[in-house]
Length: 58
Image (tube, rainbow, N blue to C red; front, top):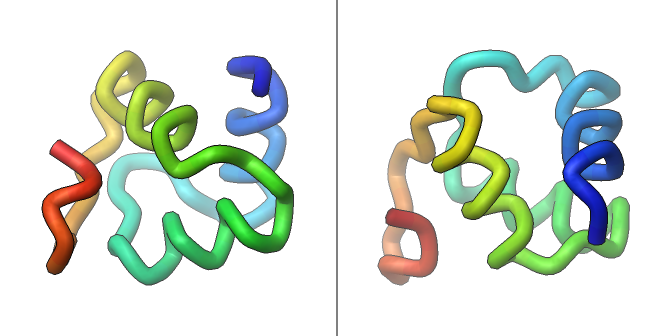
């Protein structure tokens, strides 16, 4: 999945500086984006992932 696809999904969902784990999972499902790609995008762009219960996002 491309960087642009994650950026577009985040823009559509109003995600700018932080995201909750539940939101990341929902975006993954809705936009068919791998969770790892979301995590990588967040790490690269300084977006904090809050409330991760499974340790998928670090």
